[in-house]
Amino acid sequence: MMETLKPFMDRFKAGIFEILSNSMAGQTSIRNWYRQLTALLIQEFDIEKTFYLYKNDRQLYVFNESEKIRLADSLDILNNIQNEPFTKAGPGLHYLEKGDILIPCYDGDVLMGIVGLRPVTGAKWVQDDKLLTIMACDITVLYQNVRKMIATSTERKRYHELFKVTEAFNSIMDVNEILGKIINSLKSTFPQHSFTLLLSDEYDKQTDLPIEYLDYQTENPAIMHAFVSSELSYDDQGSPAALYSPLKGKQGVYGLLKTVKKSQVPFKDHEQEFIKVLSSTAGNALENAKLYQQSRRLIEDLSLINDLSHQLNSNLNMTEMMNYLHKQLRTCLKPSEIGFVLTGQEELKVLDGSCDFFYEPESHEYLLNLKSQFEDGAEAVYTADYQGSLSKHPIYRSVMAVPMVHLKELKGFCVVLHQQPYSFSFDMFKLFKSIIHHSALALINSMLRAEMQEMINRDHLTKLYSRHYLDKFVERSIEKDECGVFVLIDIDNFKKVNDTHGHQVGDQVIIQLARLLSSFESDSSISARWGGEELALYFSNLTLEEGIELTDSIRMSAPQHTDPAITISCGVAGWKAGQGFSMINLVKRADIALYESKNTGKNKVSYASGDAVRIY
Image (cartoon, rainbow, N blue to C red):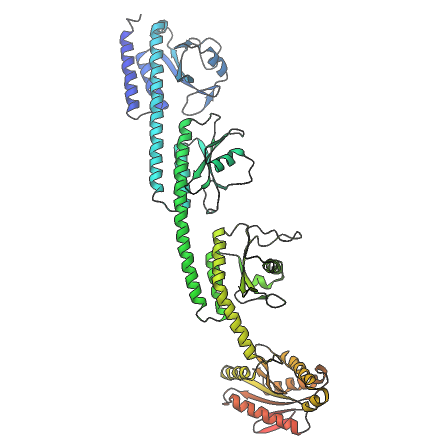
């Protein structure tokens, strides 16, 4: 029988070598191998059907390109496979028929699958066990060689991918781009696995990469072992099992790569080695990119601070400084709210340049809490997840604040808020501190200049504006307004008050009257000390008639607001646009009117009307 079938066997062996040659040429896959083997067997032998059963765990599946078919009696088939080149199927097995020839295929000592042959009824070659043994051995050897070639080809592709991604890492200085390369390379090499990056610091949250924060409080020993020891760590406690590989640079570990297999088969040595090498390469690339970005950010921060210092020291007024600082903080920190607060007074004072929120009652909790911390010695405040009081949920969760200190005295502080927790990175906090520290001196100098100017502009005793400031206010009003009213006021019989009650009481009377006059101050009106017991008022955009009535109401109120009660004499002068009035003309007319009130019995209001002076 063997001699009769020898030509068939020779052609079969030649076909085997051709399949092996094709595999060596790069057409390497179990699918291609099975297709070529099926065509060869059907061509050379009387075979009705071939099939390939592949093994996964303890189950057998029919190799089918359109669907995955599991054999219900897999265990029975596996138990009938003997340690022989081939086995003939018995009766009663699902999918198999009695007499089907089963040829086991091994990878080393591990059964990987079974090639099944269903001969045509009456085929003679089936009766020759020697021929079947040779055929089975040839198929098994072919299978093993193809498996080796597949493994070699897969390994070559993996290291080619590793070379490509390593080459790419050397030219990339963007952290998120490197993270994307890591994930894409792994998915390309191990499509049957899933991957997650567990990072130890902040990253771009807009990315769609599988990234999570590394939880330092985790109770998973595999995660902590990989992070602390910088070694691969295998977690087989969960389902499915996971492999943790450190992303390690020269200066530390920047996170972990978590790899999960969809099947229960353990990670092979070559898979672990590839993941380990890629993680190590990626760790160094991440470190270089982070150092590059940090250096770029440091240069940008220094440039920002230099420009900021230059601008703030260019004689800007307080409002201009605050608006400029607000703009810079908005650009580099992107907060929800920005506030500038003075702490020198009994109550906190919110400065120009602050957001509207800080003028609302809801801001008080934040401001009082920060003031308390700074008074207790805090150099700065950095709260990633502010919880607020127990009674309510805070509006803003991220808080940063830096004090402004002059000669060890707290002058105020700057605060930025964001609605989301963890919105400010630690690098942002360092930049914020640097900006405020460099700005503090200019801001404090501006505040001191403002305080000094306020002292110059105000009368020390009455806190009313000085005569010099009043002159400028009136002159500006005459230039831009349509009309105005100037009032001179003199306390009647003031010498008698001083002689009777003493100069201290006389000063208190002036202060009490000044307090009454200052209640009429607004953006368009001003009160000032003219000299001695004489005071002055000026109202922009008020007609002479309206000014006379208002002045008379003040005259009638004066006794009720002073102790001892005094009376006042008033002189009123008005102007209209186009009449050529100046401050000197206005003062002269009001002074003449005041003189009329004093000479006609006092406690009166007189006013200049044209060239005449009339008593109201």
